[in-house]
Image (cartoon, rainbow, N blue to C red):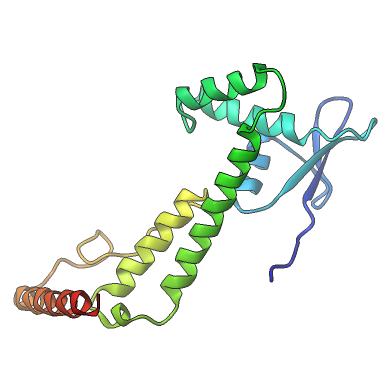
Length: 187
C-alpha cells in the first residue's frame, strides 16, 4: 500500500512564467524535469483558464533533451509515435506505452525489494558491493541518478590492494564456485 501524494502544482502565468505553489517561487523547465527525476508527479495549469498544460510541458521537456543530444527515444519509436497520431481511429500505442512503463516500474520495484530480502547469496563475499551497484543502476534506469556511486575496492576512494590479498581472491573464487555448484544442484 503506497500513499498517494498530491502532484506538485505549477501555475503558468500570462507572462508564461511557471510558479511553484509549494515553495512560492518561479521555476524553469529544468527545475520541473528535476522534480520528475526525483520521483514527484507534477501538474501544470494555466492560472487564468485553469486548463491542464502538463502534457504539453512534458513533451517540451522531452523535446529539449532530445535536441541537446540526450537521445532517449530511438528514431524508429518516434516514427511509430507520429504514425500512431496520424492514423485514423483510436490507436493502441498510448495504452501499450502506459502498460509497458507500468510493467517496467513494477519490475524494477520488485527487483529492489528482492535485493533487500534475505537470500542465500547475501553471505557471499562482495555481495553488499554488488547489491549497492545494482541499486545505483536501477536508480539510474529510473532517472534517480545517485550523487555518488558506492565505493568499490580498487576505486580512487579506497587504498590499493595490499600484498597477500591475492590469496583472499582465490578463496573468494573457490567459495563462489562452491556456491554455484550448490545452486545448480537446487535446480
